Amino acid sequence: MKDNERARQVYRNPSVLKKCVIDPKFAYVVALSRVLNALNSAHSLMMSAEGRDTPAALRDRMNSIFLVSGFLYEAIKLIRAMTKIFGGDQSFETNLRLILKDTSGQTLEQMHLKSVRHGGVFHFLPDRFADALAKTGMIECVFASTVGEKRGNIHYEFADYIVAEMMVGTRLDDSVVVTQMMEKTLKLVMQFVEHSENFIADQLNGWGFEVLPASRGIPEDQSQG
Figure 1: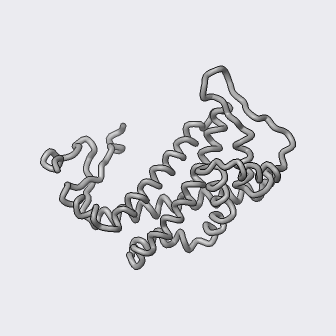
Figure 2: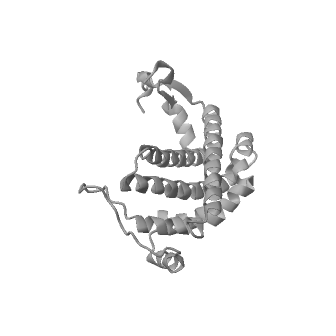
Figure 3: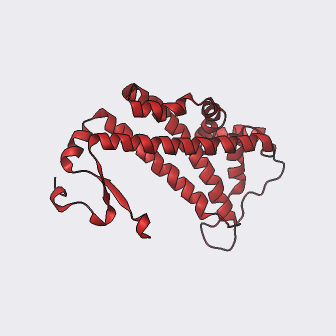
């Protein structure tokens, strides 16, 4: 790691943490932070498959998109819940509230994110797959593909393509719809990450958290309790 890329830790002593855990707002900030972890991990899955043209790499790219979509749907629900407790907070109003006001994001949520979240990411219900199978435009079925005999390299691609159709809401060869969906999803992810990081930083600063070089670790006199 280069000097200008040194790791940092946002940390505060136990006395501040004790105040935070009884503040109703803190749990929402922790939950929002968890969403960012999930989104960043899903993005890492996409990056790890970059430049590779294998069944496993295609599987990882497709599932990265599915996971991001499901996480975004849940993230929007979280932001709506946060309006009850953060309404009027300047940082919330100028960051996360903007996501709820984005009509493009609202359309994406209802037309694409909801269906893939319920149909193929967090729920694996046969009746939802049956509905999708009844509507599919695919006339051929490569059910699975792999390279070599190593366990875990296999991609059950037909199942993923069915979920992709759930997400798109139409045929996968409708390039206009697919392109618009992907562009809106990327835009929403970028907005969400930027606004969330700004909001979390504002909240942590208000609670008295501080940024320390990771190499310092947790100060000895603050490591107890």
